[in-house]
Length: 357
Ligand code: 2RA
Image (cartoon, rainbow, N blue to C red; front, side):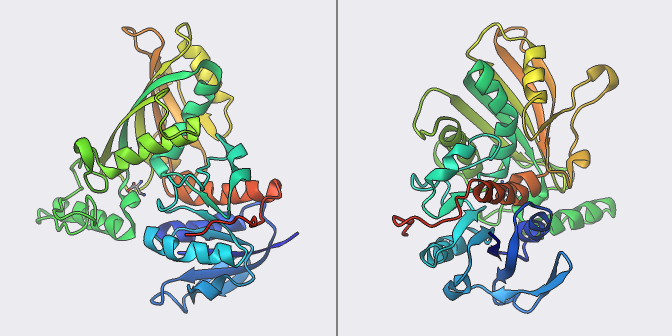
């Protein structure tokens, strides 16, 4: 079977990578539609040896489409993906819109692929910072159980969008030229005040919500519980997050502190579990200063893990450092990988009780 595929949001920072990852994927593509806003309609993009013209996305754009890869922003996904499902298309959505919807599986192929069979036409891609953390933690949970996760993130500017990344580059040059740094977007377009990111750290990603946590921090907490326990309210795994924007263009870093159920686990056992895990690459050799770095992760599909070591004052607790390209494993590649799994499992079918907005 070959598939009629559409990429919604094809011209964005994630969308262009989806086109590239689809071309490199195992999905047999019969036809490809590139969909975006009216202002991008008419642009030409390369797919394998073809040139494809970008079209404006409308509900009828999905007539005859089997598979949609989406990263258009939450409001567009909310409006258009139910229309695509109604027309018989199965959608993998990278926006945050459907992630916590009980009718929508939230999937990382290396972690919970069995959830894919429960889709009602829409599969949600988790947040980039959640994905890389769980690719690293899942082998540990499976072998030794997890009681608690405390994560601090060091998130790249690209996570805030293409315009934010451009603003960051301009700021760096302004700083070096001794000029004031223009700041109109970062830390987030959704809030009132803006600050320079270059040569700075901003402990705010997305807007603030209850108890002084940001939306990004709540995403990491709730998405982790939904994925690891298939139960958004389970108290079994305690999760706490602090998300910080750092002056790095692409690829997020995370320090992950975790406590295992099994109190007699050693750091070597943790390292072996990570080394054997799908999608994870262990880079952990302090004697030779080997550890993951964002500069080395850009453009790669893997999640890189290092600095694994025991908390010498709390038996069964460990630290580790996790790095991945937030636009690839964090978004475009995980989306395409979910689509590959749907194809492999013959799940590209919209059920009779399909998702309705
Ligand atoms: C960020 N994870 O980094 C969020 C959305 N991409 O801004």
